[in-house]
Image (cartoon, rainbow over all chains, first blue to last red; front, side, top):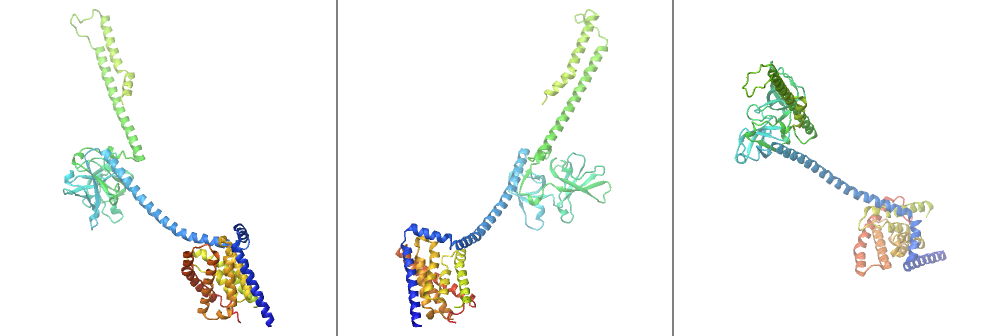
Length: 368
Length: 162
């Protein structure tokens, strides 16, 4: 038993010595041999362990990158929101610049400050006042259309009631001038409270949904041609001889931040062309259509005028041809009837040349 | 040791070796536990010192294969730690948790000391920092981990004296 223990102890010592010796030997081996042994171990025994380690590293980097990705995503979302707001603001300012370019004169740009109190939702405070030329009852517009009317003016600020104010009224018409009425806020419950009413439209003037409504220029406050909104449909009222229409406003007051205050001198100047030439494609198309129609109208009037001139000259020629010739002074009297006939023919020819269709068409063509 | 006990010990040994190459990289801590030391110590107290030295040598070689610059240092450290643990098992191994923790702590610290000396790649200051600061921390963490492993596998790891 003791011998077995002794021999076992010797074997342990021998194993220890061998292992320690091999380890020490490994520490002093040349690098290529060490690398070769390590490499063969990595390719065989350690390969599964290396795979485990790689997987763990991947999981860890995935965890780490998840946080980074989340924060990056948050930043991108935030940036995207900011970009959206900037784009909207850009669009708004572009619209305002475009409006200013088309108005050309007689306006004061201002910033609109929204009140936060009860009832303030129907009024705005503008950052310009009397010092900038703002007067009471001046019309206030945005690039989309009508906003309201100045009711009070201070040297540096002014107060505006917007179209949703219960006291707001404006004379309005269908954009083609086929119907007139008075626009006022629709005092119903939400969400219809945010609509307008076109009241007092003559019973014979039915308006289709989608008809654009603009200011009519009557009343001396709002110039003609400011967009008010679009007809949504007719409202049944107790008025027997007139119609009332619900109108979707062109401008949403909460979106208004920048406005134009029209000077009183602009009231007498129609603004039809200002809002029919927006920068949008639809506006551009409308503008082109309007120009074509105007050109057609002017062509028609020119043709009518030319036809009238032809008729007048024809009548003149006829009268010359049929009228008996008055006795002329001797010096002026042709000596024979043939000479008189020649003179009459020459006059008729000159009239015909002057009123010939070729000449008329050419003259029309040369017009811009 | 019956073959069943041997198989269970071998299973836990392999599991711990696997954890060394999965849990440590997963955590990525500056101070980390050493599952290889825990595995060698747990097995060493169940086998003869010579076999423990051989197991330590093998595990050390596996560890060395991933750091060829210090090739042999882990093998030497593990050999000595394994042999010592097996030789001293009667002294240290008991059912006392604190003694278990101390056993793992000393084993890991001894491993680091031998490794750093055998490695011969560090300066004096760096070596001292490693042995006085980082190694005790790693040894403490290894001790805690070793105790947790022991408690988790208590039913599988019967006392070597039984």
